[in-house]
Image 1 (cartoon, rainbow, N blue to C red):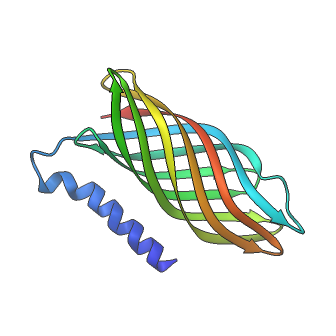
Image 2 (cartoon, rainbow, N blue to C red):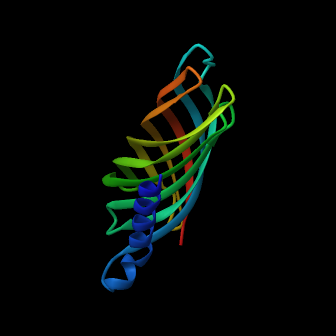
Image 3 (cartoon, helix red, strand yellow):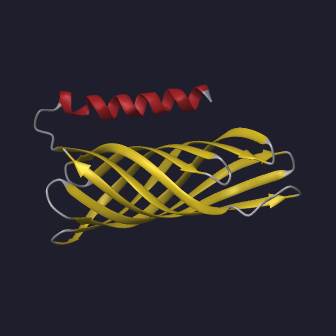
Length: 171
């Protein structure tokens, strides 16, 4: 867990200080929130259905109009699952106000299943489409797959899959 905390801290520090070191760098800061559906692949003796609504809050920056870095906190009530993710997405403009994106995520998930709590490293990827409403607002639809290795009290979570709708405010 200390390695994950160190890596996350270094990534966040790089994200925050990057604009300071290069004055000609185009940086678009944002904060946002999203809601969606999550399905966890839960198996084992004490397993329960892993489907539920999920929400997230996030912040980050779009660099040079094509590279998005973000930090995300997500929560799913059913498994009392807290997600802490850092992500990179490549934005591909396909029409006036529409971008497609694909990227990778890594972080930690704390899950409480069958009266056992465990924090696990997660990694995966996401794809989606972003619509630019105006200079300050964007919205998107995305799909994210996260592999994880939760195994406590004869219950396993192999992966999480999410479909999200998000709105971001740009500074």
